[in-house]
Image (cartoon, rainbow, N blue to C red; front, top):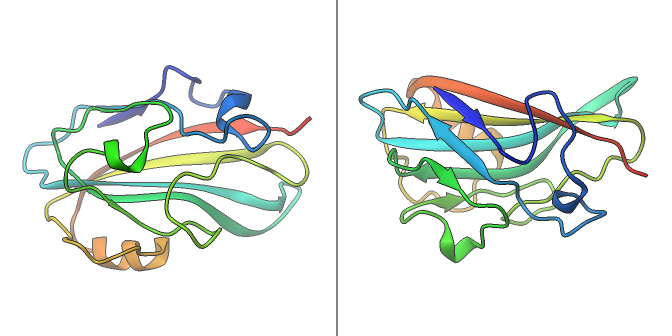
Length: 155
C-alpha cells in the first residue's frame, strides 16, 4: 500500500499554500495498492515535533478521517467536508475541531506524518473521534499501513 502526493515528495517540504501561512488547505493525496479484504481506510496526519524538534514534548494531530471507502484512491487538494468520499467520518484534531489544520510550527522545521491504514472493518459512525480513540477502535483491524512525511519551516 502507498500514499503519495503530487504536492510534495516523501521527506520534502510541504508547499506554503497548505499551511497556516497560506490557505491552510489539505494537499492532494493519492492511495495505491489497497490490499484485498480492505473494508475501510483511515487517515491520521500528525506532527511529533511539538513544540521544538530539538526538544519535542508532544504529538500534534492535524487531521483525522476514518471509514473512507476502500475504493478511495484520491483526496483532492483543499477537499471540503461535503466532498469527502461517501461514508467518510471526520475525527477531531488538536484544535478541537474536525477538518484539516495545516502545518504551523512555532519553531524549527517540523515533520508531518500522513498515515494511511487499511482496515478489515467499517468502524461506523462513532462521531468526531480524537486520534487516541480512533487508534483504539482500529486495534486488531489493521491489514496494512503506509506513510508519507512532509516538512515545514515557517518564515
